[in-house]
Amino acid sequence: MIPPPGTGAFLNAHGWGGAAVRPLAGDASFRRYFRVTLGGRSAVLMDAPPDKEDSGPFLAIGKYLHNLGFSAPQALATDLDSGLILLEDYGDGRVTPVLAQDASDEHAIYAAAVDILAALHQHPPGDVAPYTDAEYLREARLFPDWYLPAVGLTEAPGHDAAWAQLWPALFTHPPVLVLRDYHADNLMLLDRPGHQRLGLLDFQDALAGHPAYDLASLLQDIRRIVSPKLEAAMIARYIAARPDLDEAAFRTAYAILAAQRNIKILGVFTRLYVRDGKPAYPRYHPRLWEMVNANLEHPALAPVKAWFDAHVPASARIGVKVSA
Image (cartoon, rainbow, N blue to C red; front, side):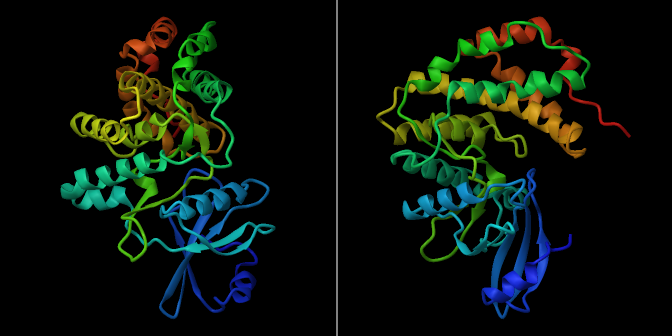
């Protein structure tokens, strides 16, 4: 992966002239990442093409989180016109591969992640847009818009109306900052003074919404299986830390949001394959369907389950076939 044009001039202008630049793993967006090293120092160069990515929210939310005492990488230098941002380097301790090597600390790491959410949700959401019912529906519609055509089905009537019966349950609590992609792949183990144990990544799409969303994102993680026992323990931990919550209403919202998110991801991962030519993502479909089928059994999901049972047969719940 070749660094973007202008990298050398950008680094020269900000005291990193002559630094070594090597690629890092990217994500599902158009952003690319490189590690920059010079004389014992290191930083992360983010290449976010301005015609495809708006880095303003990432910088603003990162600063807000930092000011609240949470560990979010701060910008060392920026050139938004070219889409180049130099960030603090949080190292290589991403939770997913760390636990793949040694899962003995799994409970403690997830407890720390849950405690971050409980603490964050004590604060106002900041200057972000609300997570509206229109946005929840837009996300849910990624399934009929992208997944159904990819498996040879057309959308049957009643999809939107079924979801509309669920949205009121998501507005029973004052909104909090919802990071929207809070899971093990976006959490970094840190060991440095002045930082919490876990660093936060990928929060640029944050909205003001229900506190159960990020908990569901963490505990129903498509990339890393969380056992039902650990999921139950972490939900209980969060609720214990938030005595102000209506527990029954929170658990109902958790069930709805877990289903909505997993169904949305079925659509997102299909779009990444069909539209963007990324063939790796459909491999997650079978696991997603396992979770969605389980999600739909919750009584709160009854209207959506009825629509799925009537219009999405078992033969279509195995994933999109990738062309050779």
